[in-house]
View 1: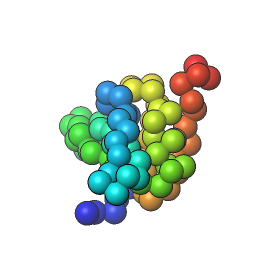
View 2: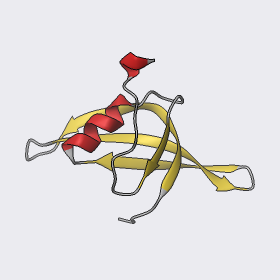
View 3: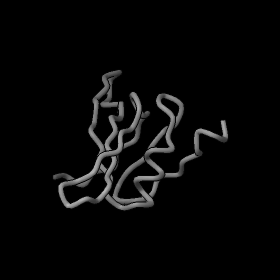
Length: 80
């Protein structure tokens, strides 16, 4: 695993799952700029309950996300 600062847009819908231990987690894909007009798709996974809720609140292609073991600023879909 690599700790990195990732900035980009959520691609598709974030998903929630349950681990074998019964704990919820969320995954998402983020389309991040790689320089010179190129883009990278980065897989994001969140385990902390507040971070999971924030990730699930992001609307695909509508919200920018910045991640580095922190809670991103998110606006719930219901506020759009």
